[in-house]
Image (cartoon, rainbow, N blue to C red; front, side, top):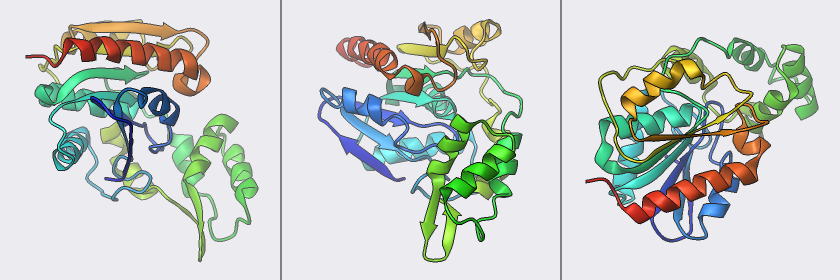
Length: 259
Protein backbone atom coordinates (compact mmCIF):
# COMPACT_ATOMS: atom_id res chain seq x y z
CA UNK A 1 0.00 0.00 0.00
CA UNK A 2 1.52 3.29 -1.12
CA UNK A 3 1.76 5.98 1.57
CA UNK A 4 3.43 9.15 2.76
CA UNK A 5 4.22 9.85 6.40
CA UNK A 6 5.09 13.06 8.22
CA UNK A 7 5.30 14.42 11.75
CA UNK A 8 5.82 12.81 15.13
CA UNK A 9 3.49 11.74 17.92
CA UNK A 10 0.39 9.58 18.11
CA UNK A 11 -0.54 7.99 14.79
CA UNK A 12 -3.29 9.22 12.50
CA UNK A 13 -4.21 7.51 9.22
CA UNK A 14 -6.00 9.61 6.59
CA UNK A 15 -8.10 7.67 4.07
CA UNK A 16 -9.41 9.16 0.82
CA UNK A 17 -12.65 8.35 -0.99
CA UNK A 18 -13.59 6.76 -4.31
CA UNK A 19 -11.47 7.93 -7.30
CA UNK A 20 -9.16 9.77 -4.89
CA UNK A 21 -5.62 9.39 -3.63
CA UNK A 22 -3.43 10.30 -0.69
CA UNK A 23 -3.29 13.97 -1.72
CA UNK A 24 -7.01 14.51 -1.08
CA UNK A 25 -6.56 15.09 2.66
CA UNK A 26 -3.11 16.63 2.37
CA UNK A 27 -4.24 19.95 3.84
CA UNK A 28 -5.56 18.22 6.94
CA UNK A 29 -2.35 16.23 7.14
CA UNK A 30 -0.21 19.37 7.09
CA UNK A 31 -2.14 20.76 10.04
CA UNK A 32 -2.12 17.54 12.07
CA UNK A 33 1.57 16.76 11.44
CA UNK A 34 2.52 19.62 13.76
CA UNK A 35 1.82 17.34 16.72
CA UNK A 36 1.00 13.88 15.32
CA UNK A 37 2.54 11.31 13.02
CA UNK A 38 0.29 11.37 9.97
CA UNK A 39 0.02 8.57 7.44
CA UNK A 40 -1.71 9.34 4.14
CA UNK A 41 -2.44 6.22 2.12
CA UNK A 42 -3.57 5.21 -1.35
CA UNK A 43 -6.29 2.58 -1.00
CA UNK A 44 -6.10 -0.49 -3.27
CA UNK A 45 -6.94 0.36 -6.92
CA UNK A 46 -6.10 4.01 -6.27
CA UNK A 47 -3.00 6.14 -6.68
CA UNK A 48 0.16 4.05 -6.63
CA UNK A 49 -1.25 1.16 -4.60
CA UNK A 50 -1.78 -2.37 -5.87
CA UNK A 51 -4.56 -3.23 -8.30
CA UNK A 52 -7.08 -5.89 -7.35
CA UNK A 53 -10.47 -7.21 -8.41
CA UNK A 54 -11.34 -8.24 -4.83
CA UNK A 55 -12.34 -4.88 -3.40
CA UNK A 56 -14.94 -4.94 -0.64
CA UNK A 57 -14.93 -3.45 2.83
CA UNK A 58 -13.71 -6.59 4.54
CA UNK A 59 -10.75 -6.79 2.18
CA UNK A 60 -9.93 -3.10 2.52
CA UNK A 61 -10.15 -3.27 6.31
CA UNK A 62 -7.72 -6.19 6.24
CA UNK A 63 -5.44 -4.28 3.89
CA UNK A 64 -5.41 -1.33 6.28
CA UNK A 65 -4.72 -3.39 9.40
CA UNK A 66 -2.06 -5.29 7.47
CA UNK A 67 -0.46 -1.95 6.64
CA UNK A 68 -0.60 -1.02 10.33
CA UNK A 69 1.08 -4.32 11.25
CA UNK A 70 3.91 -3.73 8.77
CA UNK A 71 4.49 -0.24 10.13
CA UNK A 72 4.27 -1.33 13.77
CA UNK A 73 1.10 0.63 14.51
CA UNK A 74 -0.75 -1.06 17.35
CA UNK A 75 -3.48 1.57 17.46
CA UNK A 76 -4.27 4.67 15.41
CA UNK A 77 -6.74 7.46 14.95
CA UNK A 78 -8.58 6.91 11.66
CA UNK A 79 -9.97 9.72 9.50
CA UNK A 80 -11.79 8.81 6.30
CA UNK A 81 -13.78 10.72 3.72
CA UNK A 82 -16.67 9.07 1.86
CA UNK A 83 -15.59 5.52 0.90
CA UNK A 84 -12.53 6.05 3.10
CA UNK A 85 -14.87 6.73 5.98
CA UNK A 86 -16.55 3.39 5.38
CA UNK A 87 -13.14 1.67 5.40
CA UNK A 88 -12.36 3.35 8.72
CA UNK A 89 -15.74 2.29 10.11
CA UNK A 90 -15.17 -1.29 8.96
CA UNK A 91 -11.88 -1.45 10.85
CA UNK A 92 -13.45 0.09 13.96
CA UNK A 93 -16.35 -2.39 13.96
CA UNK A 94 -14.24 -5.49 13.34
CA UNK A 95 -10.99 -4.61 15.15
CA UNK A 96 -11.92 -1.98 17.70
CA UNK A 97 -8.67 -2.35 19.66
CA UNK A 98 -6.75 -1.00 16.65
CA UNK A 99 -8.73 2.26 16.56
CA UNK A 100 -8.09 5.03 19.05
CA UNK A 101 -10.75 7.26 17.54
CA UNK A 102 -12.78 7.46 14.35
CA UNK A 103 -13.72 10.37 12.09
CA UNK A 104 -16.10 9.74 9.18
CA UNK A 105 -16.46 12.67 6.79
CA UNK A 106 -19.77 12.89 4.91
CA UNK A 107 -20.65 9.21 4.84
CA UNK A 108 -22.98 6.96 6.84
CA UNK A 109 -22.90 3.23 7.64
CA UNK A 110 -25.66 2.45 5.14
CA UNK A 111 -25.97 1.15 1.57
CA UNK A 112 -26.24 3.81 -1.14
CA UNK A 113 -27.82 3.78 -4.55
CA UNK A 114 -25.54 3.84 -7.59
CA UNK A 115 -24.68 7.48 -8.20
CA UNK A 116 -21.51 7.25 -10.28
CA UNK A 117 -22.93 5.91 -13.54
CA UNK A 118 -22.04 9.05 -15.52
CA UNK A 119 -18.56 9.06 -14.01
CA UNK A 120 -17.82 5.49 -15.05
CA UNK A 121 -19.31 6.06 -18.50
CA UNK A 122 -17.31 9.23 -19.02
CA UNK A 123 -14.04 7.73 -17.83
CA UNK A 124 -14.34 4.43 -19.69
CA UNK A 125 -15.34 6.14 -22.94
CA UNK A 126 -12.47 8.64 -22.86
CA UNK A 127 -10.39 7.96 -26.02
CA UNK A 128 -7.02 7.70 -24.30
CA UNK A 129 -5.22 6.91 -27.54
CA UNK A 130 -6.39 10.04 -29.35
CA UNK A 131 -6.68 12.86 -26.81
CA UNK A 132 -3.91 15.44 -27.13
CA UNK A 133 -3.98 16.99 -23.68
CA UNK A 134 -5.98 17.40 -20.51
CA UNK A 135 -8.21 20.00 -22.11
CA UNK A 136 -9.44 17.33 -24.52
CA UNK A 137 -10.06 15.01 -21.58
CA UNK A 138 -11.92 17.70 -19.65
CA UNK A 139 -14.13 18.48 -22.64
CA UNK A 140 -15.00 14.80 -23.00
CA UNK A 141 -15.95 14.44 -19.33
CA UNK A 142 -18.06 17.60 -19.42
CA UNK A 143 -19.81 16.37 -22.56
CA UNK A 144 -20.53 13.12 -20.67
CA UNK A 145 -22.64 15.07 -18.17
CA UNK A 146 -20.05 15.30 -15.39
CA UNK A 147 -19.86 18.64 -13.56
CA UNK A 148 -16.61 20.56 -13.86
CA UNK A 149 -15.55 20.20 -10.24
CA UNK A 150 -15.91 16.43 -10.36
CA UNK A 151 -14.25 16.29 -13.78
CA UNK A 152 -11.22 18.21 -12.54
CA UNK A 153 -11.03 15.88 -9.54
CA UNK A 154 -11.15 12.81 -11.78
CA UNK A 155 -8.46 14.17 -14.08
CA UNK A 156 -5.97 14.06 -11.20
CA UNK A 157 -5.90 10.33 -12.03
CA UNK A 158 -4.94 10.91 -15.66
CA UNK A 159 -1.26 10.43 -16.42
CA UNK A 160 0.84 10.64 -19.57
CA UNK A 161 3.33 7.87 -20.27
CA UNK A 162 5.59 6.87 -23.12
CA UNK A 163 2.61 5.38 -24.95
CA UNK A 164 0.18 8.20 -24.32
CA UNK A 165 -2.42 8.85 -21.63
CA UNK A 166 -3.73 6.33 -19.14
CA UNK A 167 -5.58 6.15 -15.84
CA UNK A 168 -3.44 5.80 -12.73
CA UNK A 169 -6.27 4.08 -10.85
CA UNK A 170 -7.65 0.65 -11.74
CA UNK A 171 -10.82 1.80 -13.48
CA UNK A 172 -12.01 -1.66 -14.51
CA UNK A 173 -11.43 -3.02 -11.01
CA UNK A 174 -13.42 -0.20 -9.42
CA UNK A 175 -16.26 -0.66 -11.86
CA UNK A 176 -16.32 -4.41 -11.25
CA UNK A 177 -16.39 -3.93 -7.47
CA UNK A 178 -18.70 -0.91 -7.41
CA UNK A 179 -21.70 -2.82 -6.03
CA UNK A 180 -19.60 -3.71 -2.97
CA UNK A 181 -18.39 -0.13 -2.54
CA UNK A 182 -21.90 1.34 -2.27
CA UNK A 183 -23.04 -1.47 0.02
CA UNK A 184 -22.66 -1.79 3.79
CA UNK A 185 -22.32 -5.41 4.96
CA UNK A 186 -21.99 -4.89 8.72
CA UNK A 187 -24.89 -5.45 11.11
CA UNK A 188 -25.02 -6.18 14.80
CA UNK A 189 -21.54 -4.77 15.48
CA UNK A 190 -20.62 -1.75 17.59
CA UNK A 191 -17.61 0.50 18.04
CA UNK A 192 -17.90 2.31 21.35
CA UNK A 193 -14.76 4.43 21.08
CA UNK A 194 -14.73 8.18 20.36
CA UNK A 195 -16.44 8.81 17.03
CA UNK A 196 -17.12 11.94 15.02
CA UNK A 197 -19.33 12.26 11.96
CA UNK A 198 -18.85 15.46 9.97
CA UNK A 199 -21.29 16.30 7.20
CA UNK A 200 -21.93 19.08 4.72
CA UNK A 201 -25.35 20.67 5.03
CA UNK A 202 -25.77 20.66 1.24
CA UNK A 203 -24.84 16.99 0.87
CA UNK A 204 -27.28 14.10 0.67
CA UNK A 205 -24.79 11.49 1.91
CA UNK A 206 -25.66 11.85 5.61
CA UNK A 207 -29.34 12.48 6.28
CA UNK A 208 -31.62 12.52 9.31
CA UNK A 209 -32.89 9.13 8.15
CA UNK A 210 -29.40 7.70 8.86
CA UNK A 211 -29.36 8.76 12.52
CA UNK A 212 -30.52 5.44 13.95
CA UNK A 213 -28.12 3.44 11.79
CA UNK A 214 -25.24 5.59 13.03
CA UNK A 215 -26.23 5.39 16.68
CA UNK A 216 -26.77 1.63 16.50
CA UNK A 217 -23.17 0.98 15.47
CA UNK A 218 -21.41 4.03 16.94
CA UNK A 219 -23.14 4.84 20.24
CA UNK A 220 -20.45 7.31 21.40
CA UNK A 221 -20.84 9.45 18.30
CA UNK A 222 -20.61 13.21 18.05
CA UNK A 223 -21.85 15.02 14.97
CA UNK A 224 -20.87 18.28 13.28
CA UNK A 225 -22.38 19.99 10.24
CA UNK A 226 -20.40 22.46 8.15
CA UNK A 227 -22.75 25.02 6.64
CA UNK A 228 -22.28 25.92 3.00
CA UNK A 229 -20.57 22.68 1.98
CA UNK A 230 -21.52 19.58 0.06
CA UNK A 231 -19.82 16.20 -0.17
CA UNK A 232 -16.38 17.81 -0.69
CA UNK A 233 -16.56 19.64 2.65
CA UNK A 234 -12.84 19.23 3.35
CA UNK A 235 -12.00 21.09 0.13
CA UNK A 236 -14.82 23.66 0.28
CA UNK A 237 -14.14 24.88 3.83
CA UNK A 238 -10.77 23.37 4.73
CA UNK A 239 -9.96 25.63 7.68
CA UNK A 240 -13.23 24.81 9.45
CA UNK A 241 -13.06 21.12 8.59
CA UNK A 242 -9.45 20.83 9.74
CA UNK A 243 -10.16 22.67 12.97
CA UNK A 244 -13.12 20.40 13.82
CA UNK A 245 -11.13 17.22 13.16
CA UNK A 246 -8.06 18.44 15.04
CA UNK A 247 -10.08 19.46 18.10
CA UNK A 248 -11.80 16.07 18.20
CA UNK A 249 -8.55 14.10 17.86
CA UNK A 250 -6.80 16.25 20.46
CA UNK A 251 -9.50 15.41 22.98
CA UNK A 252 -9.57 11.70 22.05
CA UNK A 253 -5.78 11.47 22.17
CA UNK A 254 -5.64 12.95 25.65
CA UNK A 255 -8.18 10.39 26.84
CA UNK A 256 -6.09 7.51 25.48
CA UNK A 257 -7.31 4.33 23.77
CA UNK A 258 -10.44 2.59 24.91
CA UNK A 259 -9.97 -0.36 27.25
